[in-house]
Length: 236
Length: 236
DNA sequence: ACCTGAACACCGTTCAAGT
DNA sequence: ACCTGAACACCGTTCAAGT
Image 1 (cartoon, chains in turn cyan, red, orange, green):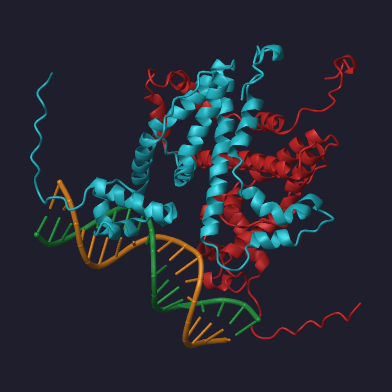
Image 2 (image 1 turned 60 degrees about the horizontal axis):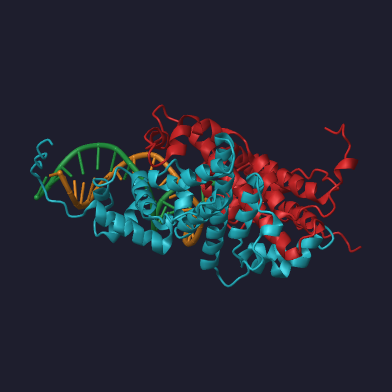
């Protein structure tokens, strides 16, 4: 082994804030007010410094978000996945969804900019791999992964903004509620008859069911389904 | 019929700009620079006025976006849909997707705020109605619609930001490309072997295939499939 | 090396005044 | 009734200067 690199002696003014402190504060701000609430100026106040001091520790706001993203991605759950490839696709997608549902701002960042973390690719790897094990070509496996990603990203984005709306709920009825209250039963009969239950129905968490449906449609039917006569009758 | 309301005589200074002009200009700006490029100040310049003049014609920026949304929604294609309910679900979803793909900013607005236009509900009505005709309960039909909406919204958002990225493409490789170039074949074997083709594969438009898979999984199997013996052999 | 303050080029929106 | 200019409370970021 080579000599340990001699630590270059620090010169000049000692640092007052560290990158770690900045990231901690950023996490705190996002937790409280969402990514929208994270501004360099706000962050500076939070660490008891000036906006410009931050630029000495991170290149710009994009790098800050990327660092946060890497942190989260590294800490995301990587559960043991089932052997059966079909189940593995579903399980990996569910794990990805659950990991992201905990911090929906990541999805906004993921789709908005070109931010991407290597550790987050664990999910893609497993979904693509399991899809190939199910008999898809690598190309079709990537397309299947994309479909799952669209569905998952859409679900999280839609639900996250619904949540934000609920949080910012003033007393007065929302525009959406008014539109639904005024539906014309002649032109929109099904929606009109469901209007009263729409909010409750769309508040239900149906990610899992939709995922199952999607995966069922994406993967080829199992080539040798267990014959019914042999299926264990008592199995729950 | 009652007397036509006598038009209250206009008094005071005659208007220099109209709501129509403002909306036209807003559409132009969005067409060119996306919703992100639409600011009240920019818009004022475009109509040859000051930012504050706009506030005399629209309440605020949110109302402006809502007016634009209504306009688009009213002009969206309402194609004739097939009789067969299963095909109708797919066709309505495709029509919705195509209508939105033409102006992806609408999706951002749709999910971000609580903006919603009655005319846009035509698609939801048809999807829910056709799903019920396929044998789903109204509740499950709403859930099916939601799954289709998640998938569709996700597809458009992801593809739109990919397009924006391409538009803003500087010479240097993106962060994403670098991550893919450095993949470790040990830990991410499938992705590593696909790295070179990833960009091309994800650029393909696979909305239709994914939708078919999703709809297949969401709807019950047709109760009386046409017996094979009777199927028209020459049918393409 | 690290931090600061002033400044630049932006936002949406309010307010008081002009015609 | 309609428009304007100045102002308020924000952004991210650059630049020159201080310690």
